[in-house]
Amino acid sequence: MAGLYFEEFAEGQVFEHAPGRTVTEMDNVLFTCLTMNPQPLHLDAEFAKTTEFGRPLVNSIFTLGLMIGISVGDTTLGTTVGNLGMTDVKFPKPVFLGDTLRVTTEVVARRDSRSRSDVGIVEFLHKAFNQRGELVAECRRQAMMRRRPEA
Image (cartoon, rainbow, N blue to C red; front, side, top):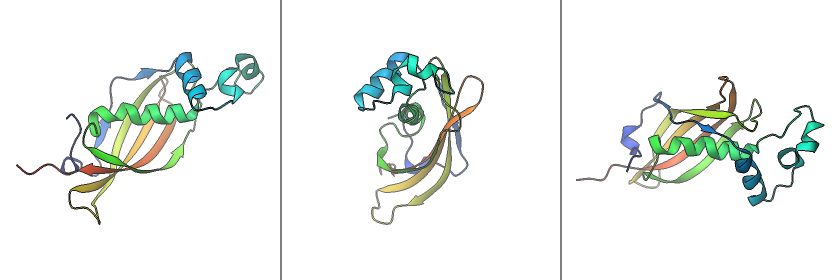
């Protein structure tokens, strides 16, 4: 698998993920409807024109999922057991239709599991930036990561 094992992560390690991803209207409408979020700010362009933003905002939970999803190929693909939590989630700037997001991930902590000898816990700090380099999302994620199998 492309993902890294627990032993391959080091505190301070930074990943700059590629490729980025342009957010489309279909992404926003489909995700918003699938998650049963009737917020007109995401779905109704005429309503959105009357807000301080003047146009629809991308659903922030989609932004969170996309940010973490972009990181998977370089970090946890096939080597994570599961997410233990996501904390300190922030959206300092809005994401609009047509914005292209790029993502970085920093390993902020790692430790042995207290309950399982076959895994370790890694804490990631994910950050998403738009095409202007503005921070639009960040999140700390704690993941249970497989240890490298013994030969």
